[in-house]
Length: 406
Image 1 (spheres, rainbow, N blue to C red):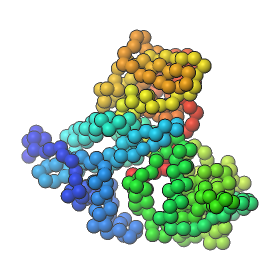
Image 2 (cartoon, helix red, strand yellow):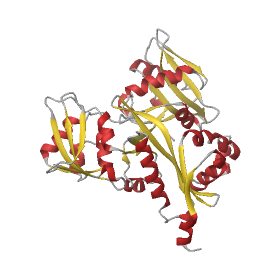
Image 3 (cartoon, rainbow, N blue to C red):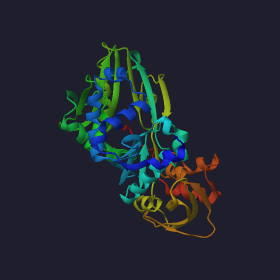
Image 4 (tube, rainbow, N blue to C red):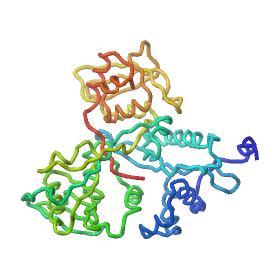
C-alpha cells in the first residue's frame, strides 16, 4: 500500500484502558523488553498490562490507529515539580513509541504537537522526560536539566561511624513516614518531583521484591531521612537516599557502614551536582556522571508568571527574541520586566532585542542547570556582556535535583 493511502487510513484517538494490551505490546517492542527481563523482576506480561492500567486511566494517552491497531503513542502524566520553591504543573512525557513500519510519516511529531498543545491548555507550563535519544528531543525543544552521578565505594573506604543522637529502623516500603520525609525533601530541592500516587507507583514499579527501607529517626523520634536499598552478592545497592538534614545523612551512612562484614561494595546514584567523594574520608572512589532528565518550557509566558527571579536593587527590563522548533506561541520578540521583588511579567513584542535564544537553552538556563555566562561562551545565546551579566543577576544559583523515573 502506498504511503499516501496509509496516511489517509490512520486516525488520531485517545488510548484507553481497553487498549492496555496494545499499549504494553508497543512499549515492549520499541524498548526491547523481553520475557527474560520481566522474569528477572518477577513479572509476567499480563501483570505488566495490569500495572499500566493506572497510566491509561489517569494520564493523557494519545495515539495513532491503523484500523483498530495502535501503531504510535505517547503519554503525558499529570505531575508537579518544585521550581525554586514554586509549585509548577508539569507534563511528564513518556510511553513514546512507533512501530518501525510506520516510521517517517511524521506521526510522532504530530503527536507531540498535540500533546504540548493540551499541556498548555492544562496550565502545564513545563514538561519533563527521560530521553532515549538526546539529539531527537533537542530537535523538539527539550534540553538537559539534571545529571546522574553513579558511585562505587569499596568496603575499605566506607565512612567511619560518627555519633548521632538518632537511629535507623528497617520498615516496609508501605510505611507512611517514607512519603512524609520525601514531601519535606522535595520542597527543599529545586527541580524535584512532588510525588503523587501515580508518581510513587512509577518510581517503584520495577523494583525487586528484596527492596528494604531504613528510616532515620532523630532524638525526638521524628523521621528525617530514609534509604531504599537491597543487598545482593555482597553489594549494597542504594536506590534512593533522602535526608532533611546533615544528621540524617550521617545516620544513614552509619547504617550502611554497619553492613561492612556482609558487603564488599556500595553502589548508588546522586542526582545533584554534589559528588560523594568530597564528603568521604577517603574520597578516591569511582564516580561517573551522565545526563539524566530533560525539560522544555511549554508556555513561556505562563512559566515566567510563576518564576521567582532573584530580588533586584531596581526594576529591570530585557527584550529578547525566542525561537521554538514546535510551538508558535513561544516564537517572536518578548519584553520581560522584573520588579525589585523578583516578579517577572512577559509581554509579546519589543524593539531592539539584546538577546537571541531558543527554547531548549532558555529552559536549561532558567532551571539553573547551565549559567548564562557559560551559555554565551559556547554560543548557545547571543547577547552582549551587559545582558549576560543582567541574566546572571536574575537567575538563582541552584542546580536542579530530580531522582524520579517514568
